[in-house]
Image 1: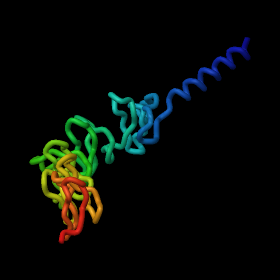
Image 2: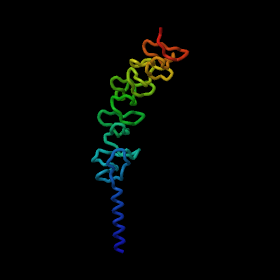
Image 3: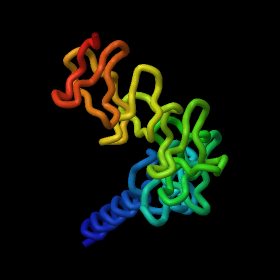
Image 4: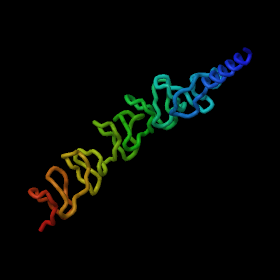
Length: 182
């Protein structure tokens, strides 16, 4: 009987020890709380805290691309992007979410916040970026897809709505092809 009790006690201690595990990596599920080491299930010694809604451990303060909200602030050089709840660089980088006219959520130098897509793009727009008529040098705004495209070479595809030809070439509207103008 004594050996059975000892075995049950050993199993209980093993299970109890397994439950009181602190999560030590960001992006992993929160472990079980331990009043001393990790009251919320994440190792405070590694500067982690548990996001209660996601039950995941994240850096404290939050790192780039980690979720943020009231009470979960972003680290230095970052700001919490409203509506998407993510820490992003401040000012924003190309392709990142932005809000025009909001300094903490605006784009960095040489970039502009697109008023419809709410993303930072080159100013003027570069190849394959959205445009409204103006593009970087050597590109034209293809209005059929509202995107900056390369200028077409001889025999390259063109059309009257912005898919333009390189300098010294013209677009044959019927053939939709660039040719040398006489």
